[in-house]
Length: 294
Image (tube, helix red, strand yellow):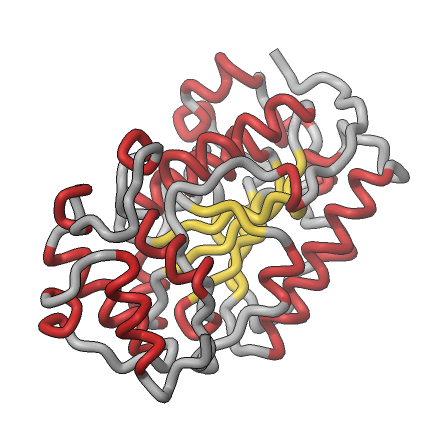
């Protein structure tokens, strides 16, 4: 009923991350960083000296430092060590008494201990949003992107990502800043998130994220942004000179692309795109804009 001892496994790397269904761009001014359940109790099941644990803590610490330098709020979840039976409810059936039996292990591990600038949420269920004011805090900060790292990937981290998605908050699971019961379950969490509720990113991508406008739009990036809206079956016989509307692209998606490309320094209008609604036509239009370097 309790959590078993967890064997170490190789931390997933970005070249092994699953296919992504969305191409959301991480923007520091929109982001909040959630350090999920990094309490001594939950880490006691791992070998503290394993490469997995060392990488997890190093990556989370690096991201927290980046967040501090870029004014990104940092939020923690932490279960209390004196939970009443009615508060734990079904968790008792699934996991036993949990932290109640180890009150001395309630604190977040020393390497990642929160400071006075951080927000610590009381954790009651798998989702960090359950019985907390996380959504209200994000709204008050004007933030709608949630970076998620910590343990366990396929339980609280993945469920929090799904809950964020259903609240119109873009979740970003940091694939190499998570740990789980096994490599299989870790990768399961990444695959589900990348295919159904969010984006999977690497620590390196987080550390290089910037709010500065991107003034260079390359063809492969441009194509990927469009293909994100199209069905995979249609892409198998895609013709770059066919009308994109015939592949299912609609006016709302086109308006989204207009806004996205303007933020990247490409000043195009809906009307211009509508008159040349093919992949090649749009790329030729974009190349003609002096703000864009092909």
